[in-house]
Length: 474
Image 1 (cartoon, rainbow, N blue to C red):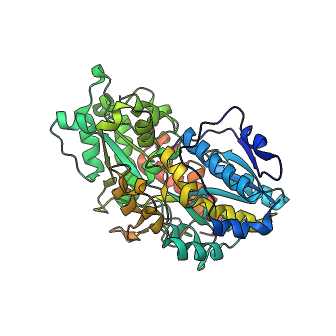
Image 2: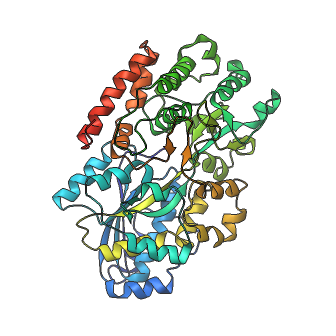
Image 3: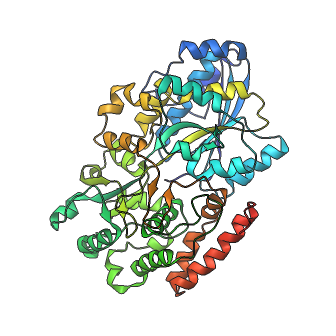
């Protein structure tokens, strides 16, 4: 998922502060009219009555869809206006690399915002381990009474010692996409999932550089998408960064070496050169989106941002897209597909934690979420079970919705033949290792000639250092 690295600031002020004209001028220029009439439920208005005139600072993990970011702004604006409060919202890139360190430094300095929403899988464990988060079990309990259960993955990434430290906001499914028209031309089957070896061989079969058809749209360059690709192959081959407790590094194993050998061969074996698009070795997180939408890729792995973009912009690739849940490997005969949630956290030292929690309760459902979801179809989805039934859009708005909803209910954990259970316990060490792009650095060294076994051993040592910095002695 592409996320800009710049910080963009928007402030939403209630009528009691600046009035309607002040609201209309937020963000610069005139905003497009909202496609959803965002309303604040009476129950939340009642709870907000005592907080009128208050303010909160918020960080939003920037979504790939700019229209979705604007819809989120409209929801915040509606809340601020209805409750007479102020919400200062900053957009932040989840791939900036130093995001957690900056948040932690602000908490320690007492200059932090009140709340943020971030990927629970990538960031909540690190923030909790640093002592930067407050317990929000009370909010989750209230939401569960209203909306049923959150996505199953949230129980692994948001809960520590039986207490919730993040509030599931919206669900982001994992997905893979292939060109079904190219597959059909070659007589290749369209299936709910494939092995990684099948995907590699099919990618070569559908490739034709003379027609600008490149079957393999995956990079191992530093990016979140590459991290996801490399880690997935390692996991389904039977390897892992850490054991199931999330505390002990187990990266250097025959299974990991086999996975790295498989990946490395794709980018170094002349046999597969025809299926690799130009410049794939230097792609960033936006590159596979751009190349997929340009119609030159036969396969990619991405959050549903690329699917949402093709639909909202009426790109013809949308009608030729086969969505599937992922790939299997020697250690697992079903894909590792359980997604993640962007989840709200309330920081230690929040100046107005009561208002911060109220904003989170407002945003997770109703028209506040619906407006964002419609601008990012299949990328922004309900995390809470009863929200899926709250509007016909979620049940009939796109052919992919039933599979996406099913992914929120995936029975977890998924166990490999080597004994690993995914998702594993939240691991600040693993999250920090991924944020440092150790996996992509490892693959770059293999492409440059390092033997896979040596590259894995060296990366194991670097991961151990990071785990020990996080307080986990090896």
